Structure formats: C-alpha cells, structure tokens
Length: 334
Image (cartoon, rainbow, N blue to C red; front, side, top):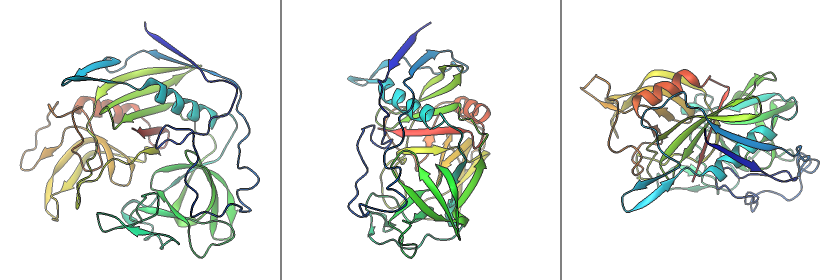
C-alpha cells in the first residue's frame, strides 16, 4: 500500500487555488482599506497538522500511475498541489461555520449588474479584470459601496455565511481573500452541519482527475483517471475555470445544443455540475446516436470540451454516485 506524507509547517497557508501559489489576488481595483476586511485580513493560524494521502481505490478502471508516459514526454499527478488544496479544505473546517454557495446558473437569479472596472473578452462578454465573466456570475460589493460592485464571483463558489445586512448577505470567500456583501438572491445557504469529506482534483495541465475521501485523519485516493477539460476556442468552447467549487446538481443525462443553434446536439451521461455550465460527465453521445460509449481515445490528451470535464463513462458514473451534492468540493488547477 503506497503512502504519501506531507508536513506543512506551523503557518496558515493562504492558497490561491487558481494558480497553486501562495500569493494575494491582484488588488488594483479594490480599496486598500474596507470596514469589512480590516479586521480579518489575516485569518487566525490553523493548528499544525500532517496530511496523509493513502491509495484505497473504490474505482479501478482506466487507472493511471503517479507518473505516466504521454507522447514523447511524461505526465503526472501533481500531489504537492493536491496536498495544498486538501490543507485548505481541512483548515476551513477547523471551527464550526455556516456555509453558502454563490449561484446564478444561466442567470436564473438575474443578470449581475456591471461592476466598476470591466472589459469585453474574446467571447464578446463582459468580464472583470481577473477574467471572471458577468454571465452566470454574482456581483461582489464592498461595505462602503453597495451601488457598484468591484468584481464577480463564479457560480458554484463555496463561501462562509457571516450574516445578513439589509438586502445583502455578508460572506467570506475561501480560495481568494475577501469579505463581501452579496445580494440575497445570489446566495444559497447550506447550513452549519455540512462536512466536506469528498474532494475532486482536476488538473488542466496534465489532463487528469483524482478523487479523494476523508476518513479519520487520512485522505484516501478513490480513483486516478484521464480527463479532458475545456478548450479556449471562441466563440463557443471555453476552458474549464480554475478555482474551488462545490457540486451543485446531478443529471443522468445532460442535454447539450449544437454550437450556435437551439438544436439538440446530443447528451453527456452521468453529469455532475460544479460551476456555470461546467459538468464532470462521461463520453458525449452526439445525436442521433443514443447508446453510451465507455471510453474515448481523446481522454487525457488535450483540452477539447466546452468547459466540462470529460471522463470515461463508468468513472463519471462513479463520481455521480460517490460525490454527494452540496457536500463535495471540486478543485480545478493547472
């Protein structure tokens, strides 16, 4: 049985889940001082802890090694980055908290208002200066100005629920620093008894996926598989956004449309949605075909999806059955 141990020292790690680096989010558009942020700019240190990762597979098909060949090079599972994210997940649960999700799938809660500084990206959509699009996102306000927001929060972002202020909810974001006011309609509270013991790690650089489950003091690896993530290809296909998200819903069949059309293009089996229109799902079935396909030779090669994370269909079903909704965290990193 293979074991990997990590000792992370005595300091609290403030992790930028989008990059894997321990650095602050760019602050060019955010005032240096704000009454919501001054008190807790630096969270209290978490207890010194040792993270143990142990392989105990529940799904053992199409399994990859820690390092494996790819064309004329090799690819790996980036365990050091995975450990940092597990450390973040453990550290945010060291004390009782109320949890919530930022939600605006397909703008169902209303189009987010324009923020102070925005641009139009290659998809001709409004985005903040950090690249988060207005479409399907949530406006984040500072306490000294609830007229105009300063950035957008992605649908599916897990936050700490800190209370209500008039028509707003005060939240703390977890994988980038900040306390924010968010209009109530964009926040779904999921309570204070949830324990996040299921973690899904999606590596967009190595095109692989690992699932892990917390048992006692250990994180157990349940699967290690090839995956295919989203590609940046305007005007339709988009890359899978990096960050920390929560599984929000499941669909046995996720119906998709043909690019630029309202016609059904087919379906993706065993789909678990974590942000915007991004699902972890099985091999897509293009209409008029209806029968599922177990594996595609493109899995684990290069990005080619429309924001989603493609898997072998049996692995997508494993994730679908194994990862409870609103209790499972998805980390996407490079």
